[in-house]
Length: 303
Image (cartoon, rainbow, N blue to C red; front, side):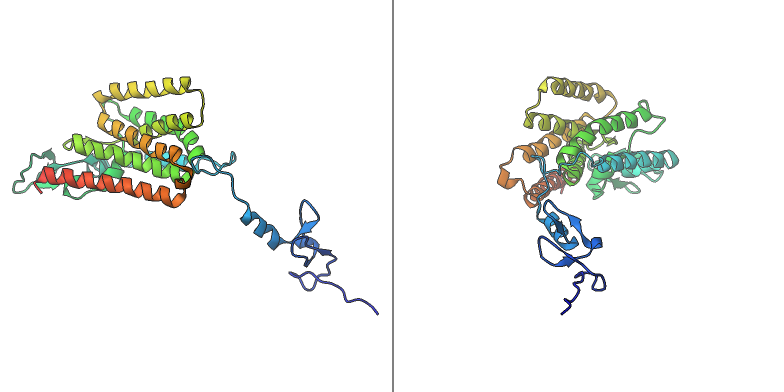
């Protein structure tokens, strides 16, 4: 009697003489995947990969030295593209800068708002419901004809390039992006609370948030803090000096927000350092920002 030829379970027309060491099914050479012992089929290899937990940092980011800092690249590109848009269309700054409250007159010019409106003059800014300015202003920078000019953009992008890559590698892309945006909004909110009649632009609030995160990360990992402390001292000195031509309120708001968010990621109990709970924490912070904006708007407009 001649035994029936065995065939591959994935390719019935192909003879097979080797069994998968995991599921015991016959597999042909095209379906063989070398394992620690023998060979496995394609499906068993995929199933095994799904069951292996990926190593993560203490902050929740995936540990992979080969992962490029894609979010940092994208953020730099968005800032540069926004600046090019300003050069082509200068009115973009007035339309999307962080501005709490101003009066726009019939001539298109903006005037100080002191709680009253006049015929032909319209309330403009966050107080008029333009909440998007809390985010869009963080992607704009001083125009080329300003005193600081293009250096404003170059300094922020240089800092973002150097700090952002390190922070993104520890936090992972999603948490890093959340930190950046929350820091940007935190800076804008403090500008609105303390200086609602000023128009501000710049990624500095978000960058200061990343600087705070950089400090918290190194402290959490137990690194030598001497060099990190000198780095932070330079940032704090820059915040003081730059108050002459940029918004110290935006810098301080971003710094405090970045420190708060990263401290929560780094020092929360292990059972609370899960994706859903961290997302909930971010939403709570956004809610607090929203309450602050509503209360400030009520104070500015009389309810």
